[in-house]
Image 1: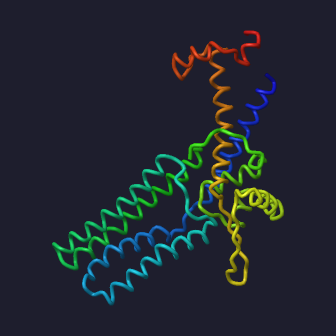
Image 2: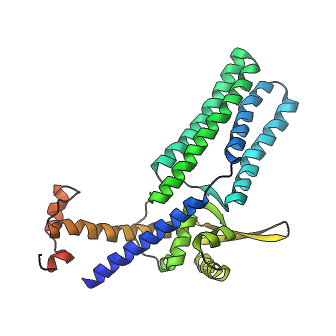
Image 3: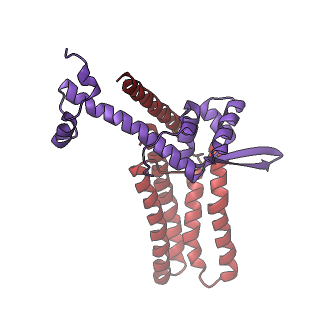
Length: 154
Length: 132
C-alpha cells in the first residue's frame, strides 16, 4: 500500500517535471517579429507568380527562389532565432490551426489559378497581396495554440 | 502517439525525462537551447544526451557554422515511443489513484456508474484507512 502511494507520488512529480519542461519550451518558442511577414510574403509570392504564366524563363527561377526561401531559409532562420525547429502540435487546437494553414495555402493557390483565368495577371497579384495578412494571422494563431497547449500540458 | 504504458529506466531520470519532454515537442533542438531550457551545465547535458544516444533514443549531428561547432539533437522513433510509453504509465498510475479516491471518500465518481460499480468490487488502497 505504501509502495502504491509512493509510486503515485513519484508519478505525479514526474508528470509535473514534464509539464514544467514543456512550459519552459513554450516560453522559448517565440518567433522573431519578421517571421510571420516573411512566411506571408513567401506564400503571397507563390500565389502571385501565377501571373507569370507562359514566362517560364522568369517563372522557374522565381518559383525556385520561393521554394528555397520557404523550405530552407525560413526554417533555418527560425531555428537560429529560437534554438528549436519543427514544432509539433501538442494538442487538438494546434492541430486544427496547422490543418487550417495547409487548407489556406491550397485554397489560395487554387483561387489564384481561377482568378488568372478571369482577370488575367492582375488577379494572382491581388490575391498574393491578400495572402500575406491571411498567412500572418493563421501562422500567428498556430504558434499561439502550440504555446498555450504546451503550457497547459495537452 | 498511443503507446502501451511502460516505464523505461533510460527515460526515468528527471533531467532525461525533461530532455525527452522538450525533444518530443519539436523536430530538432540546438545544444545551447536545450542547455538553457533545462538550466543545466554543458557537462550535465552532454552526459544525459550520451546516455540517450547510446540507447538509440537520440541522434546528434554536429555542423560547423562560422567556425563554430553547432550540435543538434532529435528524438528517434524508438525514443519517441519510449517517452510516450513512460508518460502513459505515469498517467495510468495517477489516474488509477484518482479513480480510487471517490469510492473511499464517498465523493461522486466523475466517470459514471459503471466505473463506480467496477471499482467498488475491488479492494482499494484508501479503504484500509479508518473513516473520519
